[in-house]
Image 1: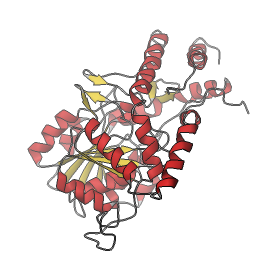
Image 2 (image 1 turned 90 degrees about the vertical axis):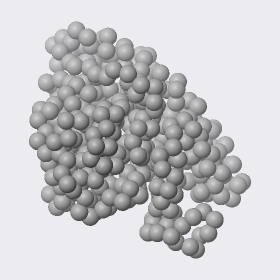
Image 3 (image 1 turned 180 degrees about the horizontal axis):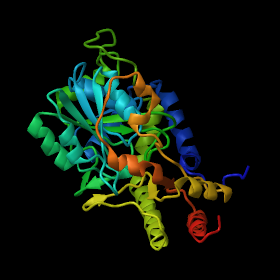
Image 4 (image 1 turned 90 degrees about the horizontal axis):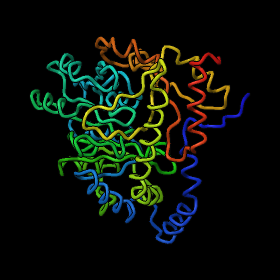
Length: 373
């Protein structure tokens, strides 16, 4: 087997580069004697609240962030929640976790983001919320969907797991809906040592509800009074400290991702591939660089032979996942997703990508279409 020379993802390189920072922060946490719900978590929440708006609550994962947002909004059994069919399964599992029914809808051609028209067509008297996924690092039409939600009295939850640093008309992802839910898993644009999450909440009462949900229904100042149902879903102090350090690095990391994307765009302009569509007024964070080609599987195999990792991210739509054969759900027509999802392939894009590795990716893709298969 050919050894991978250009990894599909580069977060292991990030952690290698932050090794001394991690060790220093670990010493600080050990010296403090506080491993969860301490000063480092509060500092992270305060900084993210200032950067991304609202009341920020750190959690154990992006999945739990979505779950808590829906639960804090009062979504439950008998309700329907609209989600795009092109997303990670956690988006829909958060809906089933509160006993509600996910409704899978189509996406917009080119951007692969949830379609406002598809959302409108899926609304019924049972619809209670919409989860707007900012796929690949680009903010969806959350303004249109927010207007639609206001018209029908719906809650808007932004799934920002891939959108750290992304903007729309100058506003950050997560600042448009009632809740902005982020994953802080190690592989995200900002990520800790393992899993982690964050919820940005517009309403203070709902923020308090999320705080209690992550901490067995209690407040930090009284560990034996449980005000509501909750679970253990707290972020570690070490992860909070590492994430706080990364926030100052995020702008430069995002700019590097955009530089790589721009070079890819130019290099592939004459090839029979469709490069990512950047919508008007968007600041794309390029968590993924997904090209559209009729030869996705063959191109991936060709690149692998040259030591280059490429991914079919979410190769199955939510409606195709075996888990939902046994879970209540509703699938609306999704012709755009059906036709295009099998043709998407994600190429390596991360701040740690070396110039020569970037060129290797360009050469690999170009050679495929030049007939060197």
